[in-house]
Length: 196
Image (cartoon, rainbow, N blue to C red; front, side, top):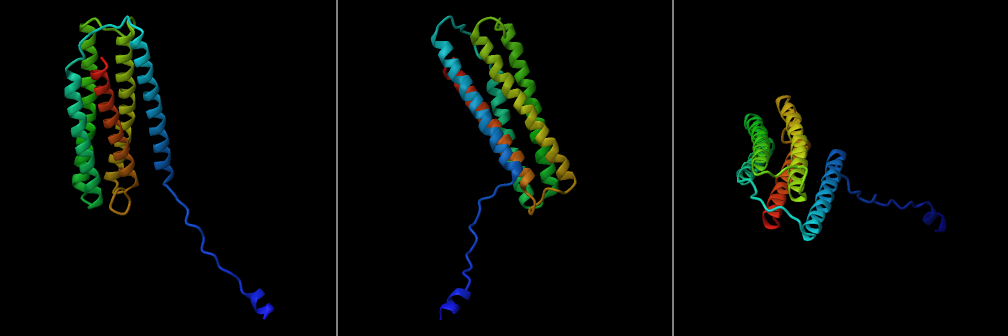
């Protein structure tokens, strides 16, 4: 009987491992690092503002309009994702293209916002109030340019039919990053309006 017990091998089920696409994992690490950067900067803004000698100026109205453009671009990005899930390749390409164009329009509007700041005599060098405005909008603009690059890569993949219902990683990465950039801008915009 002991021999029988010794010869029986126990087969254990392997533990299920949590796995994530490596590119998605890198994206989330990048997003977390951006959140930490802007959290530190908004904290620095509040500390410096409390010290006094803070320039009062009007936030350019065009920043409100550019916020609307970015929200619309999030809608078109979601449209692209839904089109990919349904293998609607024509809509996928159109939606990514519209999202890209809206992103470029947003950047142009941000530049016009800087022109408006200069016309108000608010400069990068000088009072910290102006410096923070340029840094916030400039850093967000830089990250948005990286988002436009992600969109171009996704658009090329869409034209090569590499994005479809059974291969959604690329469009999910593009959509996640784009929506994050939109949310980040809305946070910055309302932060600047409220604590201005």
